[in-house]
Every structure is written in structure tokens, then in C-alpha cells.
Image 1: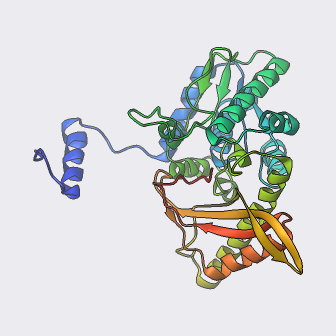
Image 2: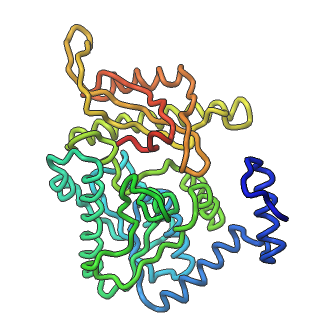
Image 3: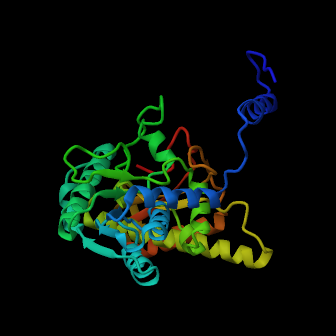
Length: 357
């Protein structure tokens, strides 16, 4: 099938590509998640052999799916390291230990490095610099843990395709933000190879892989969480008190949205159209005058972010019912010390990113 040199006909373009792939190249439409998982398991077994793999397990969707994939492929040759950098969501580290250490029986090492990371981030306000500091410190922690457990040849990571694109490594892409799990291994890191089985998948495909691997739905569909954690959801310098504020505000926000979604599903038998794919609270560096009771306050503003997206490359603001947002606002103002304003971010991606940094 020949296609005119210039055309705006999307369907014609699709047909031309389809004809080229299947008629000219004789390709077969046999890619599915079952085949992907089986292929990755075989590739990992061949690559690893009888050697050990160290996985940076944050507890987010991406690293959790990698953990399940590696457990299926190599079993106890996988060593998972969960680093609590003090920038986790409320109760997150405890949940990681419960799910992976107790339920999935993974070989899990827990490292509390809260003071170490907060010290490194002192007086640092630039989001890109914060990402690089957190990423660099992660590598150092993993290297230290690897030395404790003996020879480890491989470092596994939950890198997915949007990470690659945003880091400027996806062809002609510009650097939007650094991801500490992208770009290969620095020269001074003592691992021979890196394993990134999800590197070519989008987020929706990662979730499908998780379901294929038998991971519980509540884990597969948990809210995405960036490697640098709340360090990039706090605008400006990161302090222990700011982390406490955003942890509490984020917990309330997710709790109320989840509650509203559950009530809608119970009443209507399906999820609401407004249900966001990702939602979280961030802490701005704006302080303003407010009133609590008869007292003057001078406190921070929290920003609520919620988006609908398929591939996380583009996104639109989710239309969460105003009544839900009002409940969230009231709880945050009354329950989180240090906050006197709550904003809702309407920005799409682009021009914004999904994260708030």
C-alpha cells in the first residue's frame, strides 16, 4: 500500500503502517503479556545463571513488578533492598516489609537511612539537584549493602519507558528531569551489569505484567511513587517537618479519594469517570496569613494533584467532585499542623509534568 508523501489522514497512516509490518515484513501479531513475561523470565535466567541480583525495591508499582518477575525467574538468588530515605509516604516502608518480606517471602534487607538523606538535602532547593543527590545516595547505599552480602554481579531496576524519555535518552528527547534509575551504571559502581526488564513498557503495560505475575490488585494499582519520593513533592528545601506535613496531607487526600471511589462503585457497579490514574498532595514553598479560631497563622499551602492518563506521557487534570475536594481541604486544614491553604492543580501534561516539583 502506497501512502502519499504528506497526509493528515490518521486512518490511512495506520493502514499503511499495518500493511508494511504484516504484509511487507511478514510480522505476526503475537505479542501479549503472557509471552512478554515468559520471554523475560527466560532472558533473566540465561543472563544471571547462578549469580546474585540486587534489586532496589521502593515498593512502588515498577520495582514491585520487577521483584515479582525476578522471584519467578531466579528465586532466592534475588536480594531486595528497601531503603527508607525518610521521604516515603506515610506507612509505606512498613507496608513494603509486610508484603515482600512476609507475604511474598522475598530475601529483603531493610535500611533506615533517613538521617543520611535529610543531611545530604540540607539547604538544597533545586528539584533537579535534589533528584541527583537522592539518586547518587541510593547508589551508594546499594553498593554498601552489596558489599555486606558478598559478591553481587547485577543491579536490577524498575526503569520504564517514560523514565527513559524524560531523562533525554529516548532518541532526540531533551532532558525533562533526571531519573536515578536511567542512564546505566556510573564507572565507580561495583556491579557488572544492570537488569531492566520493564525498560520498554509504559505504565499501563507494567500493571498488566503485574497481574500476569499474580501480584495482588491492590499492589498493582497502588499510586505511582517516584524514586526520589517526597523529596520532589516538597518545593524548596526538604526538612523533617515538611516531610511530616506532606505525608499527613497526602494520606488524607488519598484516603478520601479512595473512599469516594469505593462508594461510587458500590452504588453504580463501576468506577466513576472522574477516577484519577494518579493523585497525591505536594507541599508548596508559599506561606501566607490565615486565621484558625481567633489566632493568626502564617503557614504553608498544600497543592493537590490528580490526573487522568493512559501512558503517563500526557495527562489531563481529573475532575474530582468538588464535595470530595472540600472534605479533603477541611481535613488537611484541621488535622495537619502547619497548613492553612489547600490548592487544586489543574495543569495538564504538557506543559506541566505529572509530578509537582
